[in-house]
Length: 436
Image 1 (cartoon, rainbow, N blue to C red):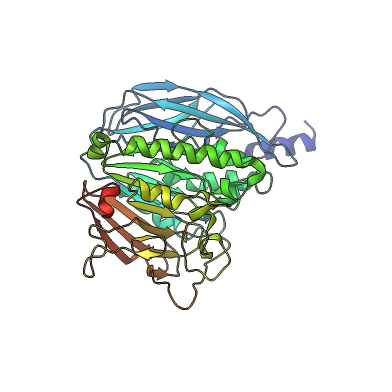
Image 2: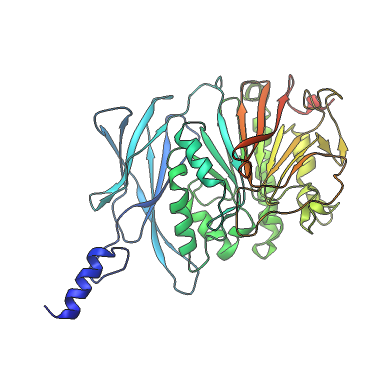
């Protein structure tokens, strides 16, 4: 063998990430979970760069072995960058799970397996207390909160992660290599608990194709909006971005708005609202904020709040009409908790207990998990509807205790995990009748 040939063999052996002639990249990576809306099921998604079978081996944890297997399929995704990089997104639905049972699993094929992970299947009843990590705006560069989130996920503190838009900065950057690196980085969290998402402005490139292809949310795998039930709550994820990227057509705004109204109508039926009284929305760009920039939420006639000219498809009136309890937002790189508010008027439950039986929805903006754009400052004086403002890196914890009590707290990563804000949202009544 020539000296050059020996060098090539050495590089193939010691640098397997480099593409070598005749090699196949079928090692699974970027594994993550998502919840399809059925407590007897869970979706496992991962990536390979060459075709391979889509298999998940799983079994009760702790257990002696992976006693079951499930098969799915892979979709070839071609990034819109100049290199036209392709990858294969594998999706497998694990079915027949026992609610509440912990399972161990690994994904891949005989050509390569992931490391083993574990998760706990959701309970079937609405009578349990799911726990969430909630945040938006986390990038590959400066993801400051991620190590703490990983540690807490490994400790079993969360049942679900809600990532409220803006990933990697951006998933498509550098021919989607940044997206690959980000998905690898969140794997230690996302492979343990369902990682539920909504699109942000940083996902817009190539008609949101990296976002649509990499994640597997309920309903159609490439949808920008969906809803699901967990415990005593109905959660709605939607796209604020359809209002701002109108090159894809105003029709998309109308389509989402019609879907939202239909979903809210169904969730508000008396029997359904009795079983799952909490309705919680998550969308990237907030209706209100008091940051010192020129984002939509700083405008009195916010597009998200009031809709397209002349006041078409506005979300504030829609959410108020159906008695949405809690609205989760990001986009602003800070934390802001609002008093219960509708049309700029504060509707506190009472002076001493503003969040007990409030007369309007509660808004939380939590977009400071960490990214290269750093933090966003506030205007000097808070608005009348602004209750708490914190400008540091962190994330939100949420637990829905039961049908009447929900706990929210803000964790400061800058202050070593200190809880810097917390409220009880207490509602003896849900639905639009609660506003009166």
